[in-house]
Length: 320
Ligand code: MEV
Image 1 (cartoon, rainbow, N blue to C red):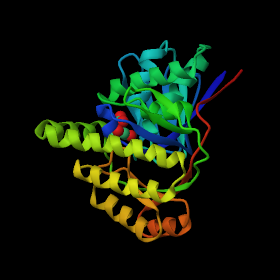
Image 2: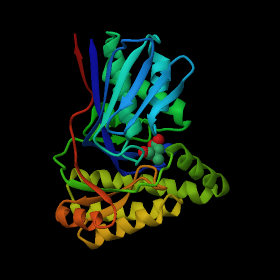
Image 3: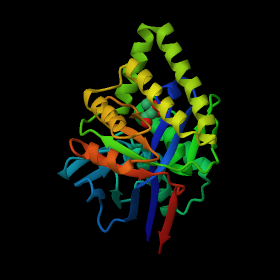
């Protein structure tokens, strides 16, 4: 028997970091996925292999440790935590595939967490709703990272264009808003939890200033929601640029991200900003027009991919 689940990555359009402090955020699922396949093992070991990420490890699911067989592992802590919480520790073979960069702010940890949970539920023949899946995946992310909003795990479960309100309620924004986004990503490794922690320390040092920046990000996201509903492209772009200025002010920008953000604007992006935690990771350029020029301008010096909004959330297939 094989249980296969795939879940999309995401880009945050507005409100990253502020969302950790109960401000709203808007994110979309992208047409790039993480896929997890689980089969019974033919021996006594639980293995995790990724041909895309070029590593193989033997997992100890009872004490959440692993032994490296080949390559340089990534994203294993999330998979180990899911196995620890949900699996009966019988030996299984897991294969992880991804068609987007891992650890780059595109929601790879949430996509992998959601896909691993769903694949395990399928493997153990356990029925689940999307609500339970998103809820349990958020619990895993929090366990691994310390602090995490439910935004990434919700997007990976439900897909589409999602608004997370101050009350932590998730709702789909139903519009025909469509655009190509160009994602520029850096090869600099960074951890979301470390960056979220740095912002929290900055907030402890300057509570009044950082609180008001977070509140401003929140108002900006509310304004952006209306701009998206009206498909007001100029306003969406302008608000993205303002959001970028605020992200810079809380210390999550880098030289590489800045270079890509300004180049994208020069070559025709309507707006561009960091997406996700920053400190490395990725930027997005909103390109309702001239996406080709922006893509080629980024690819000249950096890594870039074109992404579109996806409506395809979690998909589970179980084959006997
Ligand atoms: C990371 O993709 C987004 C952050 O806002 C953290 C979170 O929401 O958990 C930086």
